[in-house]
Image 1 (cartoon, rainbow, N blue to C red):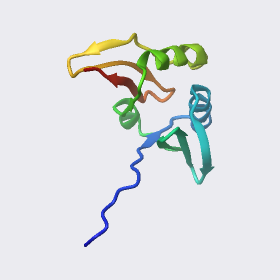
Image 2 (tube, rainbow, N blue to C red):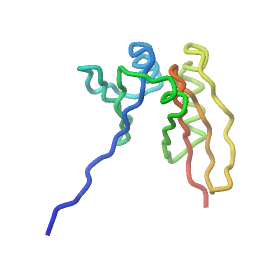
Image 3 (tube, one colour):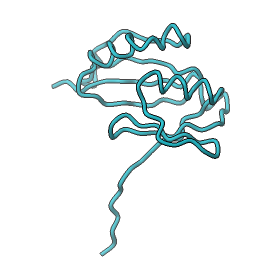
Length: 122
């Protein structure tokens, strides 16, 4: 029998300004576990992604990440308290209830990558 167990999946997130994006994600509370060869490995608990020192404009403007969290209100407050919105001039939406049974909000990173952060609701 084959062992097809998957241990992890990570997206390569584009960065227009690699140094600026690394600072943004660090200020947002992610841990940069490694950085080399134009790829930085970030994680927050068990959630992780790879930031790449590469950016095609059409890719960054259409790239979206989804972070499923236990408490969307706590995350929204965390983003507000981090100061990234004013420091990096990024967009942050209010929390909304979606028809797909999720409460979420969106924040863009300095390259225009959209992060949708939300929690499931019953």
